[in-house]
Length: 123
Image 1 (cartoon, one colour):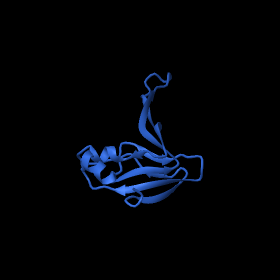
Image 2: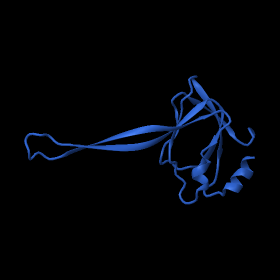
Image 3: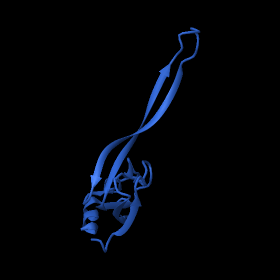
Image 4: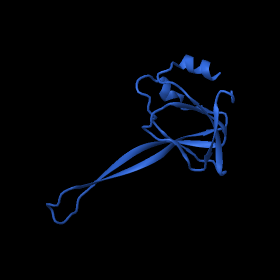
C-alpha cells in the first residue's frame, strides 16, 4: 500500500485540511495522532440596564470543538469524497501528537468516486 500512497511528514499543530476545503485526498496515519475539529459560532445578545432605550448588542464568538482523535492505522478523509455532489471537508484536521511530527500516507482521489471504487483503489 505504501507504494500506492505518497508519504507526507507533518509538524506538530500543522493543519492538514480546514472545514470547507475541497476534498481531494484520502489519508492513512502511519505514525502519530490527528484531531478533527468542528467549527461553531455562539451569538451573545446583551443590553445595558441604563439608559433604558439602549440598543441590544450582539457579539458572535467563533470556536472549534474537537470531535475525534485519530491514531496509527486509521484511514480518514474518504467520507466527503464518496458522499456525492461537491466534495468539501466538513471538519478541520490537525496533527496533535505529543512528538514533533506525524507521518501520513496520502492518495489523491478523483471527485465523486463511489465507495466501492475507492476501496478497490486503496486495497
